[in-house]
Length: 638
Image 1 (cartoon, rainbow, N blue to C red):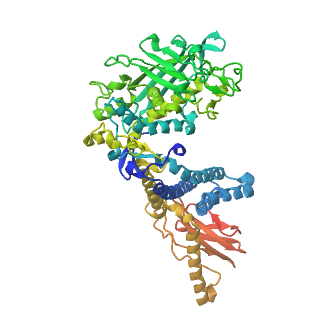
Image 2 (image 1 turned 180 degrees about the vertical axis):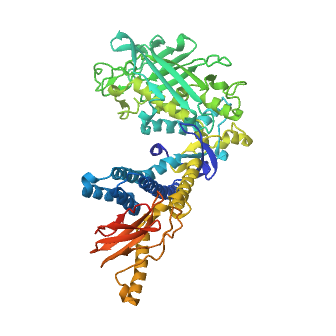
Image 3 (image 1 turned 30 degrees about the horizontal axis):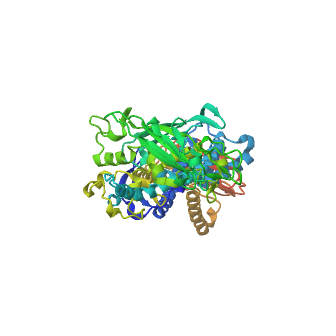
């Protein structure tokens, strides 16, 4: 969507203010910032999310190790794997460690190792992908609330020729922007809102003449209008056009047409009303041009009736270097004598159309001119806003837009034209109508937003035409947003939830890893740095004792008795080892989740036959200790 939005003048919108941004799922509380500041905020929040994921991983590791050690039938390898995971820290390291253990242990691999491999792999994906989603999560859309001071609605109450021309000169730029938007619009995004059926052929009249019907419809939602409120409000437009030959009354007799001009004039009686004569000829314009005429009909107070209008394509006698077969651009089969070009035949048909516009909100239907009728679901809509919508939507948009576009209304006149020649083979009234319908849809969506650009986007002086809305009531029609590529609407809920989630993850991780009163804190006894620190400190103390008393060299005594029962009153840094023979070994108490005490035994070239270690207040013999450096020995309960 942002790629199709143009950058707006910063003066027409308001930044750094809370407002309601319309979305498909309803309005969201948001704040508008510039695109540059939005990028900075998103970068900062991405760091917060990444940090929160790290804290969440820490929590998951502690929980996983805790429950792994609580298993009554856990294996030796399972404990080793849990200790390795706790010390690996990062998901990538855990993944590598798990793969390494799987390769070495093979059939003896504990089931928990496969679980750790799956969790760490998932954590890798999440840690890499979640920061990418921060932008879409924070950015509700590309828009900002309009600046009420910039709103201007030309008053069209002056029906004189001068007054009409002044108003049209102010509104033509908006029409050109709408038809220009057809070329850049993503048609696939509008397919569910705009429908233009293929021609329905009703009758073949022969000689290339045929009667066809063209159906179209489009819906414009409150979000499309940019309305901050009234989610669910929708303008529904339906229309149909049919080829009409019976309105053609006559053409100027050939003998009355000067030979040098060869331009007959076609006369039509619109709606078979002799008082509504319209003449069509090449004098209208060198290229094909269209006229849009509305048949005024009464409207009931609370019901929207169909509005009838006619589209007359003035293409008669236009020159083409190709043959046209569309009824509205049907040419001679062969060039006239002495000509090198083909001419469009006189007596071309007219498009007789009708259109119905109505508002729909909460299963209620409202006429365009009476949106805030008393007792209705939209009775609270400010009268100035209702006045603006009625001002621009009370007539078929395709008719008013066609008048403002003038010679640019027909796509056939702008495709393949060279000078006074056009390409009749590529001309089609269906393509003309399709572009007009799409342009009408875009112009309808821009109904409110264009009020911020009328005075600035026109060469005419806005001071000559009064504002339809008094200055003190402009804020009552400013309840909409302007969509722009250089602003971002950031969701307030997202801006608040991400720091809260980060703080929660950080607090939980800090409690379970740093607070000794937390029950799961015992898991931290498997931290490698903690174990090696205790061992090195005790080993240095023992070495100092041996140097003082050479007779005690090779023997270490228990320096602190481990209290019986499971009161956990012993010191966490107690290092204890007692053994016979010539051995170089150190052991450190490691707390266990189940309340028992375990000893981490570090041995180097153990040549002794037996060892004894203290646990639960008494001595337990452990024969044939492991020769691997840093083995984990589970001690029997005392």
